[in-house]
View 1 (tube, helix red, strand yellow):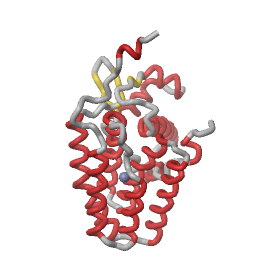
View 2 (cartoon, rainbow, N blue to C red):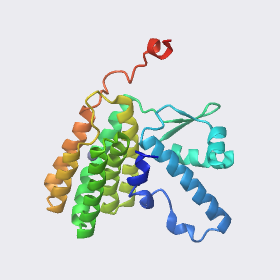
View 3 (cartoon, rainbow, N blue to C red):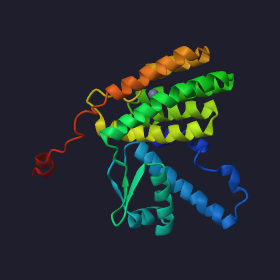
View 4 (cartoon, rainbow, N blue to C red):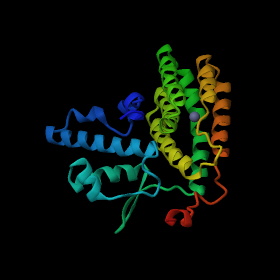
Length: 255
Ligand SMILES: [Zn+2]
């Protein structure tokens, strides 16, 4: 499909998902391995669709419909939904089913507070373990982001912006930090969608460049400061103090 961001900006992180215990899989029986592989694919498809705002917060994820879309059993869909719920990307309600998570303004502020604590620590750890290869990986990701911006592909921009922060945590080499940041940056994507003020721009490209520069100069103090300012800018660009996206009922039912 022309313009489909999945084609040319494929996630550089898909092989790095810290929630997937890939190393342990070689010991599993073949049938179970197959099943887990299929589940991983369904998981990734739903996860990317949420990240790219093709699935809106609050969207019902019906087991039957997903089972038929992916041509698998409902039990398998349930496993994937349980995993997404564990990562707080999906809300599960007894009797009502699964829905794409819809963080409240309070939860959104909690997410930013957690990120302000974690991401400076990521900067410090990354700089103390820095290699030329890691800098190259960051610059490579920056290229993908800039390319998506040039094409004005907002879906890809939001996803890649979030993935930049995940990549920093991956490269810092602490799997617990990386897992937390993966969850927090996915929630941030949902939050940006829900509380996007007209001027919201998710992550500013120049700010990511400045952060990479500070990292490559091993200036930990500057990198931490730039990261905190960056998170402040994202949070301030959102309208968290007003009610989320109001639907104009008249407009919906006009004609
Ligand atoms: Zn950013």
